[in-house]
Length: 218
Image 1 (cartoon, rainbow, N blue to C red):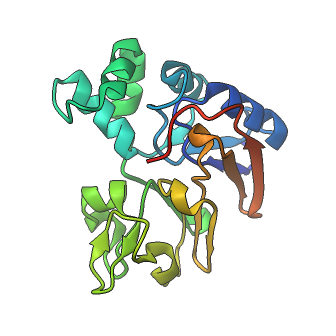
Image 2: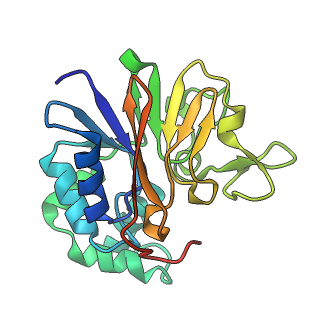
Image 3: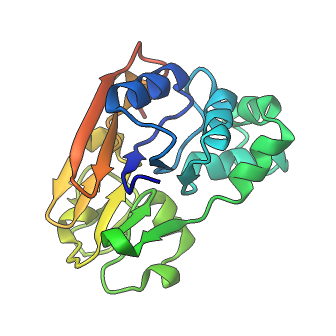
């Protein structure tokens, strides 16, 4: 490994954009590839994204939609989310194994960087963070309580004190988020925005435009 690490925001099944991003970024198999969760659902080919992740030995963290697909496979979860059932039907055994083994966070101590899907509670060790926070946090409301909403609150990243730097996804409504000790990479590719990534340790951002809007933004 060359020592370079490329962290990619929410792919959501947008395989063509992911392939283009890796090409534009100049990523090679000597580099480390990290996916910040939500590999699957909403986009055109979730199975291809998981296959690419497996073939490139990509590291990643579990996203809320990845977790929904795992529930759909087991017959659990929100019955209204038919998209998750459709993804579940397209995945192969090796894909399931990959998704099942995704951790809730990655700790790159040599880079002073944590990768999570959604967010972190300040003052709580990362290995003691509640799962629903790691998968769903977006804001703190006016009373300082954790919130899944992107409106009517303060982005959690703005309140994150460090010293660990955090790279995360999940919050497409706010698009690219730059805070003193955190970087949000979900720029809404599946909704017609961009697929974003960052090279570590230098912090260089790479983006490609979505080929189309694959799903309505929620």
